[in-house]
Image 1 (cartoon, rainbow, N blue to C red):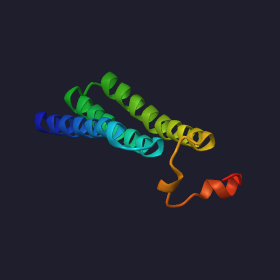
Image 2 (tube, rainbow, N blue to C red):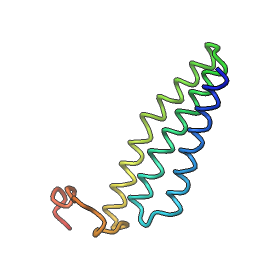
Image 3 (cartoon, rainbow, N blue to C red):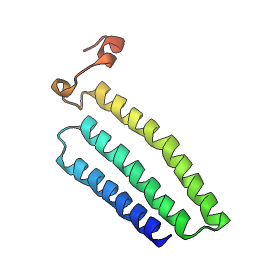
Length: 109
């Protein structure tokens, strides 16, 4: 159990660190958003898994599952809203987009 806890903590911390480095190194809002959301969510879920493995009581596991569920539900929605707001206000680099499906829908770019 200690080894599983340690591995989850190390990998989760590494994922969170890569999210932080992505926020510092990537050039525009859309790529930063991608770097902030995915590794951060995976890192938090791994850290929560380590907590649940290390403290297997029903109260802790229930709390961990609730936090994980809320994280999984809210993070993609928040990222989507930030991405759309950035697109609509022009806070992105259009030349970095491979496909721009939203421009067709909005008809303004």
